[in-house]
Image (cartoon, rainbow over the protein chains, first blue to last red):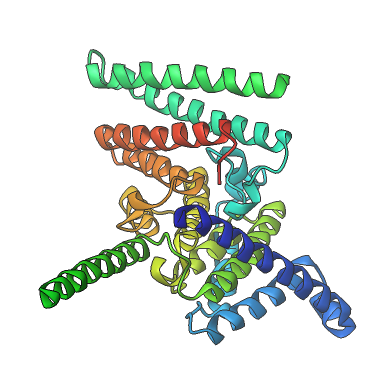
Length: 170
Length: 183
């Protein structure tokens, strides 16, 4: 019972957090001087972030110094590999196994479409793991453990794919 | 006779009370009870939400180095314990570290790290007690990433173990999703 109620409580807290964040964003957008000073989306986000970190510090959670991150980012941007810096945007989202979103509660299905999306996201993760597991086989020919793991992951991928197709066909 | 009955009743009551306390302590230690300081979880979630938006924006501007630096800065955060902020705080940490490691693996030439250093980041992010967490996508991703890092280190046995562990987690997530009970 408690294990069931805990996620609900967390979901409520995170919803509250989201509402507060939206309100804060609204508040900041209502301050003309601040908004003009921000100049662009990044500056506005950094402003919001500073506010959130102040909140964390107020309740006793130490946060990294803001200046150091920005400075580090600038240094890295200057010295980073150009080819990588111009790589396609959002590699994390594209390659993440289950494409985890920002908070667990955001993945909570509230309609069959969301549920199917979730099933298919998990399917993508399972099939990616199949690729990784079976990709080890050529380096371990004749090793029963690697072969069995590959076979099992292939079966999992097939089953998950069928579940995804069945869900989206409904 | 009366004294013996009273003593027996008290013993029974004490036993029941002790059992209840032990159960509560056990649940609290497992992080399955409400966090002792829910406001910490709220503040953490708000902060990370903005940080992720910040990273999204940096990546949209093709500033991978900036995105990595922003996520690296979060490693310095004093992450709240499970007892303080509940299991969700650990899952949020796994999300951040998973995103950082994904970027580092996909862009090995940006602020390079050795495979051993990546393994250290993965260990730091996962924590010692991740196996006792409720099944979730963020931890599953972190475990799969640990497998990739093990491959980079040339330890295929460890990689296979991590991939199988992640597969088991995803299998459980799929079952939950199909049952309509996924978190």
